[in-house]
Length: 250
Image (cartoon, rainbow, N blue to C red; front, side, top):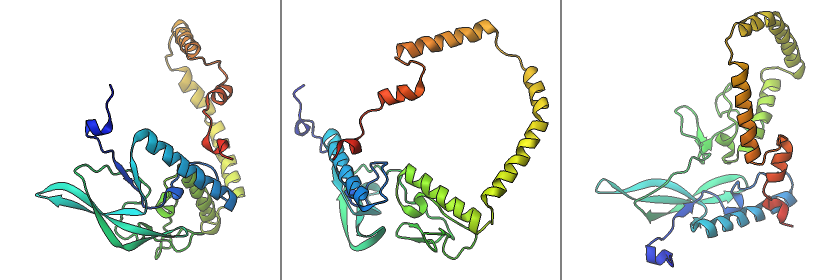
């Protein structure tokens, strides 16, 4: 329609982020070496630049919300505090700045909600050490994932949660792999003992007539053919996975 942003009066929004663009969790790739970390940072910057061009927003790094600004009982802006990056630590700086806006959208991020009795530092739960993730001052309370890492990346949180859980089981609960295997064997025996009862319950259930079931299966197959699905899920995912940016950047 030959319209422009200026003609529409649109200014676009601004994304305020507590860290830098290179710190944003925009790629699932591992960063366990300096080389991988450098490549991941390049990808993060590139992805963010592409998003800004496509969705027309601005980016403001190293900013955390301080407080709402109200005027006559209505929202008129937000006060932000600058942050300093020291390795993995996020340190609030002394200077603040105000942003005027009548609309603020808060993302559901990785900074945990404050809980009375749980100490925090720099927006995340305060822990005794990164190895144990014990909550500072509490012997039997642990935290995993975003609550201590401050990173909004699901893969990293899952991996962190698994590592800390295994550590808790071995070092604090004295629960080892062989204990799980013994428990699993005992549980399997109990399940087999009740298998006949389970089968009897299933046999008493009233199922759909065979003609109805076949009709459903034929309908599913028809929809799969319409979508180009061959029946091989692994191959279908492989054929339809879009190229990943980390594989395109040398």
